Length: 394
Ligand code: ATP
Ligand code: MG
Image 1 (cartoon, rainbow, N blue to C red):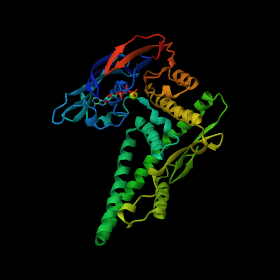
Image 2 (image 1 turned 90 degrees about the vertical axis):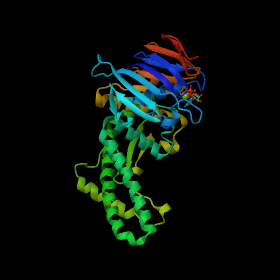
Image 3 (image 1 turned 90 degrees about the horizontal axis):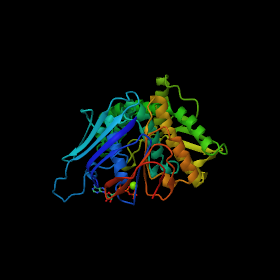
Image 4 (image 1 turned 180 degrees about the vertical axis):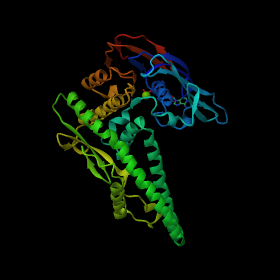
């Protein structure tokens, strides 16, 4: 897809801005705290999910208590690869504290219902901690790939999380009034059934893209290191064990269900004090593991290797979207290039040259935009175009 233009009114520190984008690289540059990332966030909100995951109330311009902020309105004009001659408009609004989103005048129940329709990949500095950080980040990464392709994954995620919560609440009831235990046990049975079914769906949803993720990541890492280092990736399913190439047999739903029940029975403990209750096994404990030349990257990887794997994972995400949807994703890069050395930066830029890219930067490095390039100097929420061509960051 190609984003052709955006109009932003009353969003964070941007009072009014109207930008026409090029199909290649679009750069927002300038000093700190001017509104570069705000613009990237405005774009991502129109694509179904603000990548900063902020509350709606934080998105409207600062205002005095009791004062009504002006209406926030972001309009994004885009065309999809499937119908390149058709202009589409997304409108994201915040009015009286409520956010709404429309695609070509058709309202969506929530912005997240739109998520996945408009293919894109966000790469922000926090993604550089993907390897070393908490396992939740890696699940979020692979869930996001699945979400971008498949709406059912969202339901599996929501139902699974609801079942975890309900089981914790029911356990608390047992602890508070043990005489209700019989009733509560029935409910525990119902919610455990949902937990298991959706846990299987969740793992399935992730593993559907894992093989392509693994092969793409291995290929790209080999390219980046010019064959010097060999990456490998495995999916550590907390219930079904390590998966590298051979996926569990997802046609054998009964067999998987039984394995899941066995694991839960082995590890589950009801009736502890509320604060101690946990569903100890399941898809919410799955993880991705990375090795370089057969050595665990999380534990022993150098800073450079860790950075390279994170980069590769994001590039692989874009490749998977391209392969599965025949739609070129838009890439949003928040400050990432400034974190990379020249070699990795060149690699990323070359790899992304088929996509439309949006970059924020206050880096003093040089960006060789031999292709289609447009840049804006950002100052206190205003955007000043400085044309295209070869461009030196600051
Ligand atoms: P950096 O280079 O440091 O990342 P940036 O240009 O990306 O800077 P942004 O995060 O886009 O900076 O913008 C930050 C500015 O926006 C800050 O000055 C902040 O105070 C302001 N800001 C954030 N939220 C709001 C809001 N709701 N209303 C008004 N201003 C806001
Ligand atoms: Mg920023």
